[in-house]
Image (spheres, helix red, strand yellow):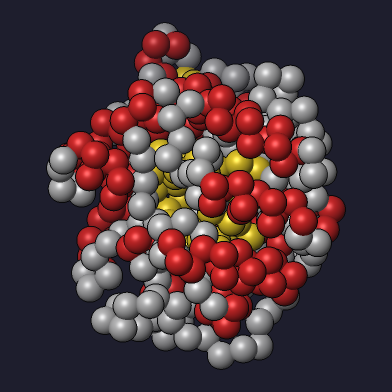
Length: 386
């Protein structure tokens, strides 16, 4: 499996490890990845208790392979205790999220430490320091995913959390992740009282090439999933593009009044492959949860020596939680979750059949004998997730 076909999460719900009930209730919400937070969302006096909550929660997790744990900054005593807990836990998370990373050396060190305990999770890095932003290319190569940490980064820069203030970092992340096939996940939206802000932010990061977004409240998940999960219509069109270019012997064709050529076909193939990979791992039906290890951590000689698959104990089928769905945000002023979360039958998460790329589609594509240059692509809890 190539990096392009790794399963990339589109929504990650952060839950602080403040109580076992809080974490368990979060599993009733429709997120690709459920993250248990041991870092900023837990005050220093509660760190030890949070680790006990995390371990107990992992043992109850319906899909450990799609469960993440955010640890304290490497180099702190809390991080040492976090890693010891994970090493001794009978159930390991499929993803470990690092914080305050400044060098790819830290990522490789964490892989080596966990490997000594027989654990090979995907490693995601929270990009939240100027040094980390400067080394974003090397960190993206070493990690399996990058998550923008806007609060700490903005605080260090001495700026407000605005689109303009973080645009350069987002662009650098998108370029680095595209180069190495690394998951690119946007920061949380802190305006829980303004859903239009969330929608606008999602549209903008999608245009930059981001794959997913963090949520700190379940009410945000429906909007994130609807916008970022594989879309049935988009996948059908991608299949038609690949067929049109194939029918033109790999050249330029006219499809529905628009010129398409090799660059369009390459993007279309990637869209389909990523859609297939997402469905195999994250589809709400639960059919793909046990296959999560096939899209596991990067394991080239220069990045990791362990197996691509996550710990075998993490690959359990996803089960529906029968417990009542309640908001997980600690802030009582946070918005209540929306009445309807996307269902397994939501068209935005549906995988179209192979029949979409039919002969009729090919007939709509008219080869063009123009100069190949004419085929250029048309321009055409906030503390829980810094």
